[in-house]
Length: 445
Image (cartoon, rainbow, N blue to C red; front, side, top):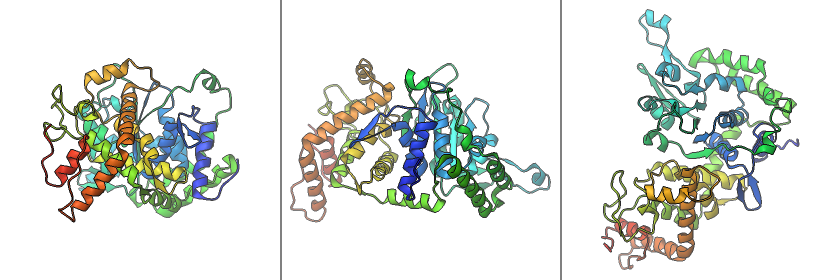
C-alpha cells in the first residue's frame, strides 16, 4: 500500500486497510462520487473527534472489534492494551471494576489513594454490551461519558482527550432498556450489518491479520508504564507508542498519526465553517424536534391533540424534546464528513447524511408513526429507518421553502437591530420560534 505523508492521507490509508483486511463490509454511504461504509467511517470520526457512538447489531457482526481496530491505529495503542481496558456490561458490574479501586496498602496506612482502571485512564473507552447493565447501574457511567470526569472516594480523574464506544445487541432475555439520559449522551447510533454471504465466506479463509495490531513487546511496554498509575511518565508512553507505530509501518505499510497531528486534525474539523443553507436546515430540523403549538415545547408525556395545525410536521409524530446535545452532535460529525471529503465548509448535503444517525436514538415516536414505517421495506433497524425517512421529509420541506426560510432568518437578525422590519411569517414551526425569539406571540392557528 502506498504510504501518504499528510494527515488526511494517513487516515484514508487506515480506513482502507481496515476495510480491506479486518472489517469486511459493504459501502452504504454515498456522497459526491465517493462511497464508504457508514458504520466504519463514523467510528473513525468518533475516534478522531472525541465523539461518542452507540453501535448496535446482532451478535458476532464486529461491533466491538471495528471500534478496537480503528482506535488502535488512530491512537497508536496495541490491540492488547485496548482489550485490557474494555468494560463488559453485565448485571454484576461494579464501580470498582469500571472506575477504580482503593489502594489497600495505602488505605491500611490511613491514606486514601485510588488505583484508576485502564478504562478510566485511557482515551479509548469501550463498553461491550452496555444494555446488559441494569438500568440502576447505567448511572455509573453517566458523568464519565459526558465530561470525561471520573470520581472515586474523594479523588477525581479528568480525561483531556477521550472517545467512547458502546455496543449493544438487540433485545433478548438478558438485555435491559437503555435509559434516555444515557442514550442522549451518544452523538450517533450505528448498526454493524452482516456483510452478505459472499463477503462473509471469506472470513476465516485467510490468515488472520488481527495479529499485526498486537505486537506483544509494545503491549508489555505500554502496560508496564500504565501500571505505575497516574505517575507513569508521558515520555515512556510516547516511546512505547513510537515503537508500535514503527512496527505497524513495517508490517502494514501504514504511517500512524502522531498525537500532535491528531490534535491538529481535531482543531481543523472543529473550526470548519457551516454555510448559511446548512445552518438554516439544522434550525428547521431542531424546530420540528422541539416545537409544540399547544404546550410551548415538546415534553415527554404530553401528546399533541388530533387535528393540530402542525400535524404535517415532525413535531406531531414525536413525544419528547430534542436536547441541547443534539446540535453539537450534528455539527461535530457534519464537519468531520466535510473534512474527510476535502471540503472547505459544511453544506446541506453533509448535514442531511449525518442527521439520521444523530437523532435515531434520541427520538421517542408515536406508535402510529412507527407502525406506518414498520410496514415499509427497509435495510436498517426500525429506529434508524424512521429517522432517515423523517430526515427525507424535513429535507423536502427545506427544499420547498429554502429561499423563504433563509430570508426569514436574515430578517429576524435585522429586526434585532431595527424594529421597523416586519416579522417573518410562514407555515412552519421555525417561523413561530423566530417570533418567540423576537418577543412576539406566534399565531395560535
